[in-house]
Length: 172
Image 1 (cartoon, rainbow, N blue to C red):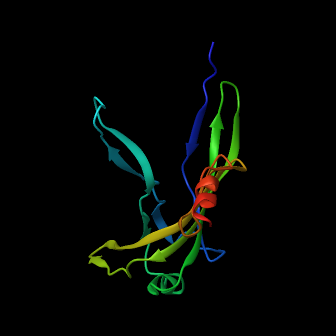
Image 2 (image 1 turned 90 degrees about the vertical axis):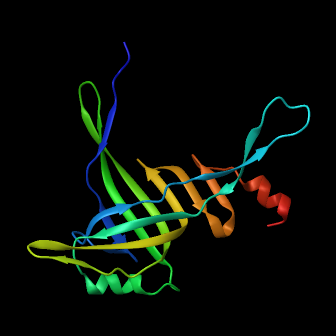
Image 3 (image 1 turned 45 degrees about the vertical axis):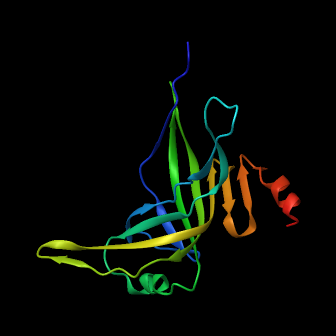
C-alpha cells in the first residue's frame, strides 16, 4: 500500500539585505521560472517541435502590510540590487507522524517601481512593489532544488549545472 505524504507551507518571513522584516510583508510572489521555447519545423518533418532557447525574465511582487519607510527606501533605488531571502517551514505529514523542513528562497532583485497607496476609510492602506530578479535559488530541506544566475549563465537543477557545457562552448 502506498504511503501518503503531504507537504504544507502556510507562512514565511522575508529578509532584505540580511535583516528580518517580520510582519511588514503581507504577501510575496517569488518568480516563476519560465522557459523560452523556439519552434522548429523543416521539410520532411510531419510536425513542428519546440526546443529550449533560454529563460524568460524573472519577476515578482511584494504586497506590503503598511508603509515601512526604513525598508521601503531600499526599494526606491532602481540602480541598486537587493538581496532578498524568503524563509518558511514546510510541514511534512506522513501516515503516522509530522516533521518539518526549512524552505529558503534566495534572490537578487532590482526594484521596478516605488509604490503609491490606496487610502480607504477604515481599511489598511494597500501598497505593492514589483521587482525583476537576476538570481534565484530554492533550497528545500537543505537540498538545492534549482539555482539560476542569469548574469553568469548558471542554471542548476538538483545541484547539477546543466549549462556547464554551454558556457564551455561559448568560452565563458
